[in-house]
Image (tube, rainbow over all chains, first blue to last red; front, side, top):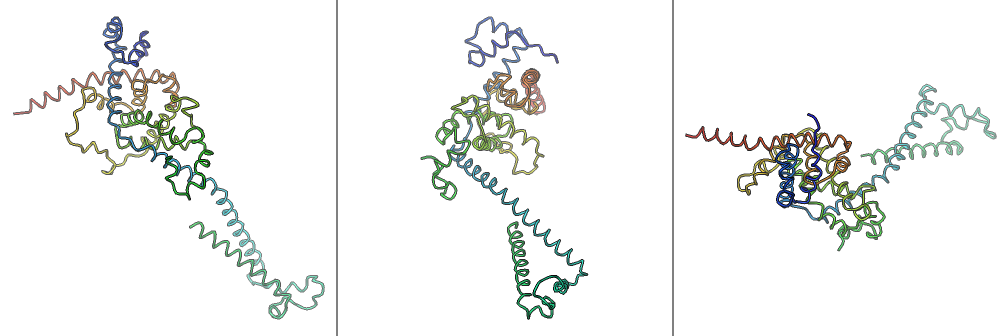
Length: 174
Length: 207
């Protein structure tokens, strides 16, 4: 199909847009439309669409603008909350991954000792601890020595805190 | 009374008016200005959606969504600063995008999703001759052609404005509009003949 538009199309479009067709337009334009296929198509289609528009506009049943304003307000607030929540979510994921990494590191370090938990404590007295001259951190003396408790309690507290963080993050996710 | 005061305090904050003015869409439009703009633009927008989609219920939904998106947009053209025409064009663009999204979605076969007019009986007022011919003809056109034809001949948009609304190139709009108009004219001219043939065949079957 070749694009062959009429030179009077623009003039006809203006007449149609102003609502001057057919009675208030020049006689020679009316005569031209009867002879020109492109312009006849334009008139037929434009009149049909304008009639349909008038009919549809009259039959439209519109909701209150207040409802739409209210919905837009709510959506904007939800979007704002979502924007604020994104960095918090990122921080949560970061904390969770750090906890998992720490746990994994601890498990690996303990696995190197043949899964013999707390066996490394027996080696600690050989380290240069200054005034310590006996196996202060051996399992047997663990509960009798004040020094060994100062190591055990923070370790347990750390595990408890990390466990709490993990539980909190898991519940937060749900 | 502005509508934002209908919202509970927990949602609106201590000073709704002041807080809301800081948001993007309300920088250029308050609730009263929106109501006035809505009254002027909603009916043409609904007519566009209803005719192009062929489903008045869908047009209701998409029209509401268009206005909500317009209000939530980051930087919409203001009808005060950019003019009513620019704001309307932007609104029609949102509506067109929503229509495209709807057409891309897989079709539902649920009976609940069918438009009510399919089940309507003959108690409605009889449509005019043009109305009766335009509906079937529009259904035979491609969705994009329906959009272009409506924007050009019902809304009176120029090729450049149609290109802006539909996202097409202005030169393509000219060609597509020419083809669509010729096809539509052919369909509108064929409709009376087809209906006459159908009437004749129906009369011939009668005893």
